[in-house]
Each structure stands twice: as structure tokens, then as C-alpha cells.
Image (cartoon, rainbow, N blue to C red; front, top):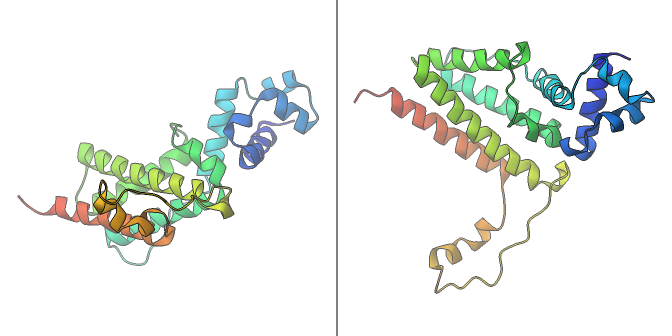
Length: 204
């Protein structure tokens, strides 16, 4: 029994059933070991979930992009995060609630701050922009995995019976509201974020 083996088992369990399924007793049973033997390597469930998040985040390697345009680097990293979400749809959700403070977490943070530094953003402004981008990515990707049946999500039913006299603007776009084009929406939102960063660069 090793910590790495326990964390691997936790990641597999999360991918099958979600983070709420994780317990030391459940993992011990899956590994054919006694519950107390797990505590010798991982002292708490909270730490175990953190380690599982770190293991998944370690797969998101910084992207190497030809050229030095910060916009292309942001696009590449955003696509890498999306690929990670689609590869680990259930486990990705828990990344939104973990503070990744080991090498895997800071590797991603450093890459994001490096990209923003190329655009002239540093310090508090850069942190704020990074967090805005992270919020966009987490929000749109959590919705994508939740509404994609091929990723274990639930397909949403179309809207029906909307009172057009009470909600005329909603009625005009009812078909669009009732469907998702995840590829288009991801790119659209990403370009909006980049355009906002470009606008922030402009002098007052």
C-alpha cells in the first residue's frame, strides 16, 4: 500500500461516482485493505480529495505556443483546461473548490501570470484578471460537462409553453435557449474575455 496507489483509486472512484462517493472505508474495500492502513498514508479524507485534485491538475501541462502573442497563449491554455474537463468530467467539478498549493497548482498559476505579464499586467491587476478567466472557465466547463450526455451529464429538454406576451424577448430566442452548442459558446466566451483584456490595455 502506498499513498500514490490510494490517490489513484480515489481518482478512479471520483470519475465513476463523483467526489461524494469517496470515503476511506470505500477505498479500503476497493483496494482490499483495512481502513486503518489507509490512514497510515493519508491521514484524512480532506487531504485525500486535495491529493486527487492535485493528481488531475498535474495532467494540465503548460502549452507551448509558436510565437509570443499573449492572446494565443491564453487561448491555448483555455483549450488545455477544457480538454482536462472533458477527460475528467466528474473530478473536474472538485477543482473549483480546492486551493492547489503544490507544484501542480503553481505550475498553472505561473503560466497564467506569465501570459498576462506579456500583455503588461502584473500584481493585483494580473491576479484579478487571472481569477476572472478562471471563473469563466470553471463556470462554462461545469455547465458543459453537466449538460453533455456523452460526459455523463443530463441532456436538457427544450423549453415549452412560454407566454410570449409576458416574455417576448425570451420567446424570440426559445430555440437557442433550449439548446447548447458547447464548441461555439466556449469560443465565443473566450474571445469576449480576451477582448476585455485588450480593452483594459488601452490608455484612458
